[in-house]
Image (tube, rainbow over all chains, first blue to last red; front, side, top):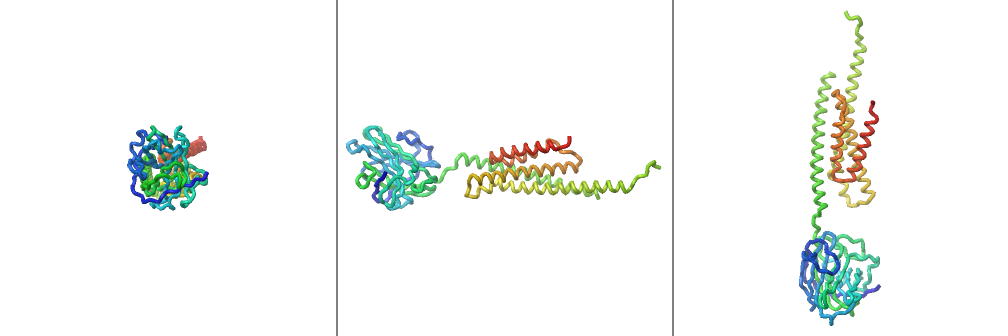
Length: 245
Length: 139
C-alpha cells in the first residue's frame, strides 16, 4: 500500500516532558490510566486538542483528544504522528509515522499503520512490514474523539522506525486529515518536542542491588574465614616444625 | 635387660617415614589451600562482581560459557578446600566429619546467590562430588 503523506514544515513550539506512569491499554478509552500523563492543551492550527503524553521504561504513550462538529468530519479521518530522528523539525528529518485511520467512522472501525517516510517523498508502509507500537481510536459522542498511540522506546529492530533513545529530544508532528495522502488529505498539523526520559530503576534493578550487597557480605565472610584458616595453617606449620625438629 | 634388643635403624626409618608423611601432607595442604584461594579470588570476579556482564556483546552461547565458568570455579573451590581441610584435620590427627562438608557446601552455595542457574547447577555438582567422596571412602 503506497501512501503519500507530507507534513508542513513548522517550527516546534511546545516542549513536552512525558510523565512516568503505568502502561495504559491502547483502546481509545480515556480511563484513569491516563491521569498521570503530562496534559497539554494545544492546537492543530485552529483545531484545539488535548495532548496527553506519558512513558514507562519501554514505551511512549500519546493520547490526542479533540472535539469537532460531525459536519466537518470525514468517514476516513486520521491522526498521524510523524517522528523526526532528532529535535529538528525540518521536513527531511521526519522519517517515521504512526497513523490511526478510520476505515468507517460511523461504525468506529479503524486501522493502525506504521509508515516509513522517505525524505519527504511518497511514504509507504514499513518496507519490512513490521508494525511497531500500537494505536487505537474511539468516538465518544458525535463531537469528541480520542486517538491513542504507543511506540517503543530504546527497543526497535525495525530500521524503518526512529529509534527513540532515552534522554533524547525528538520533534513530533501531529497531523489531522481525512485521508493519509498529501496534499489532499492533510488538513491540519502541528509540531511538538518530546523529551524522552531516562528509565526509572525497575524492581528487578532493586533486587539486583540487594543481591549485589548480599553477595559482597557473603564473599567478605568467606574471605574472613579463609584468612583465619590460612592463619591456622601457619600456626600448624610452626607446631609441626617443632615436632619434627 | 630387655629380652629383645631394640633395632635403632628400624625406629629411625619409621620416624623418617612419619616426617616424610607429615611433610607431604603439609605440602598437599598448602597446595590445595592456594588453589582453593585462587578459585575463590576468581569467583569474586565472576560471581560477585560479575565481570563478564561488562561485555556488551552477549548471546546465548556467551551466557552458557559464563555460567560454566562460574559453576566450575565454585566447584573447584569446594573440591580443593575439601581436600585442604581433610589434610589439615589429618595433620591434627582427627578425621573430617560431615559438619565440615556441610559448612563447605554452604560456603560454596553462598557464592551462587546472584544467579539461580549457577545455584541450581552448583547444587547438583556438589551433590555429585559429595556422593563420589562418600562412595570412594574405605568402609
